[in-house]
Length: 66
Image (cartoon, rainbow, N blue to C red; front, side, top):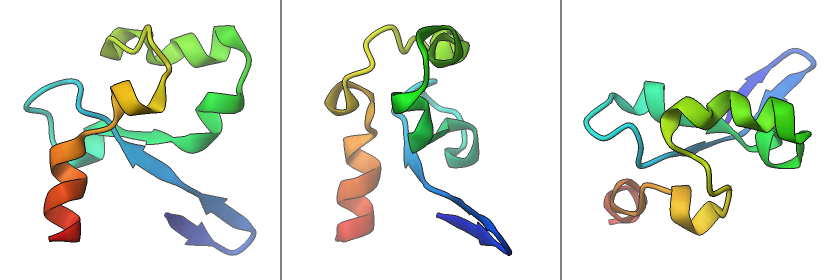
C-alpha cells in the first residue's frame, strides 16, 4: 500500500512477467473494477484472465507470510 496526503493505493504482486523485479509486477487493485479498455492496459503482461487467483504471485506471498 502506498499512502500520501490524500492518496491511498493498494497493489497486488503479479506472477508475470516472470523474472521481473517486484516493483515491475505491482498491479493496482483498482484495475479490477475499471472498465475493460483501461483493464486491458495490463494486457501486455499476459493478464487476459483477470481472475485474481490466476494473477497472484503465490510464491511471493508464501515467502512474505513465512
